Amino acid sequence: MRRKWAWGCGGVLLAVCCLLAVWLLWPRLRPQPRPVVAERLFEGVTYTRRVTRSPRPLVVHIVTVDTRADGIAFLVTPGDPKASLPLEARTTSQFVWDFGVQIAINGDGFTPWSGRGFWDAYPHSGDPVAPIGFAASRGVVYSQDTDSEPTLYIGRNNQVSFERPVGAVYNAVSGNAWLVRRGTASPPEGGEPAPRTAVGVSKNGRYLYLVVVDGRQAGYSEGMQLDELASLLVELGAQEAINLDGGGSSTLARAGTLGPVVLNSPIHRGRPEWERPVGNHLGVYANP
Image (cartoon, rainbow, N blue to C red; front, side, top):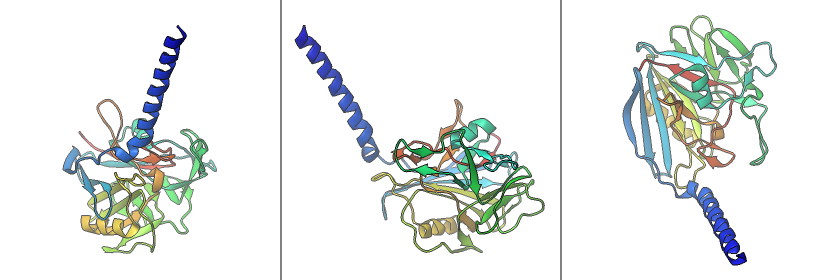
């Protein structure tokens, strides 16, 4: 009886060890996904996935939005202008679910933030945070910081601009660096390969480019340098572009039949495919 009990315990322990080994090793063993060429997601919204192993493993997600297509509208996460921490942290897929947008990316950097260890991370979903930079949602400005952060402004009629709004401020989300100015790549110096999120606009203002790069995932996607990201946006046709919050915040999600679908592989607390709760987001409404 004791021998059977010992064999049973040994089998359970072996199974647990195997599952733990798979959980730990899967991020390094999983294959890269297949490329996707200009797949229509919604009216006026196309999705492209670029996959390469040169100059390093990379998986890049590109969404092109035709701002003049029927049904296209934008939303930055609403915030409380009366609060010192005007936002409740949520993941990008939560934002898609909560506000019914069809596509969304993460937005501004935010504070407070802590990521000193697997169990020591802030914020969790629902925790109060503040964006770093100017931010507005549907005409309500809830962060007034305009000193140094480049800002994307989207007007009520989908007018896209960066240095100043066209008309009254409607939706606004800020980044931490310029990538493209007047059609020329102009990123800041330095910047190791990392997960990235960026947004750019075409010369005629018609097309908005949302770019998310997976990173910090050896053998799968190690991330982009800022100059590489800037060159990519110029290639896409961006006349102006800025870098948004990156690292573990970089996420692209869409609405799906059964709920939100995360299109990229975010990394949070060192674990691939884990979403980080962030401050605000840029969302796109679109017709099916």
